[in-house]
Length: 272
Ligand code: A2P
Image (cartoon, rainbow, N blue to C red; front, side):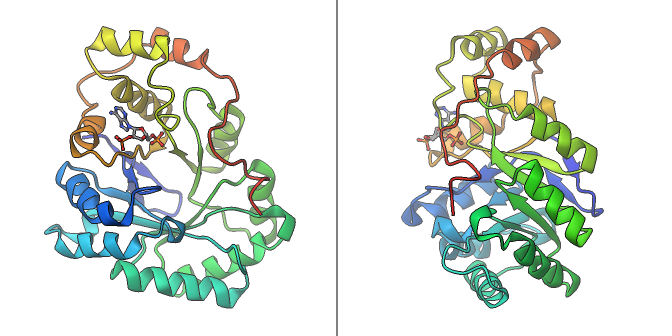
């Protein structure tokens, strides 16, 4: 079992979960059932993934103490980021999931609109009313988070960003460390494109594991939360089977050298 990460608000979150981005709605229910069955306790969803009702159906079917699961969702805000829009989105997510949201995040800062501090105030209000346990952000830069902290005094518990061996986000991780923010990696396998990397393959072979397992292990040893996704139950299970080996200091150093600032997804300033 991988350890839980401590959030600065006193709660905990499993370091390893699985993501639901691009999981087609007709597969989402089975993926969630297979994931929890495989031992995952962190389910990373979002309004934008358009599969929350199916995730909710799966959560309704699973026979597990709900307090053992961490369920996340994210406010999309493409049409409006006003308080009413945040509340409507949040309530739609709650209804679809049929259960409480443990961690709710702002999906994108959309900086040109300059409303993310107001969205954050609404999340704080929901948290203070006891409707969300913990609040965080996604795709925020240092500058965006600094504004949230300066203007509200409330630090996000997590910032979920694109992070994999080709985009290691070292400066942002250091900033998170200083503020007690958990770094959570989306597309942790580089959308599957880092699996072919020769260094990754060599390290994986040395431990008799798959490239995906080596990369998941690297994330965990960096202290990241990591949410690899797979629609294939066997791969979902195997991606979590990473407790029987550890990368050496030399192998961690070899991974560090893979940094090339390469994004496979959208950058924080691009999405408005
Ligand atoms: P699939 O769903 O067919 O397993 P990321 O999490 O970085 O976005 O990467 C997800 C991509 O990596 C998906 O295309 C997924 O495909 C693939 N993937 C996930 N786990 C593995 C694995 N263990 N081996 C090969 N490909 C994987």
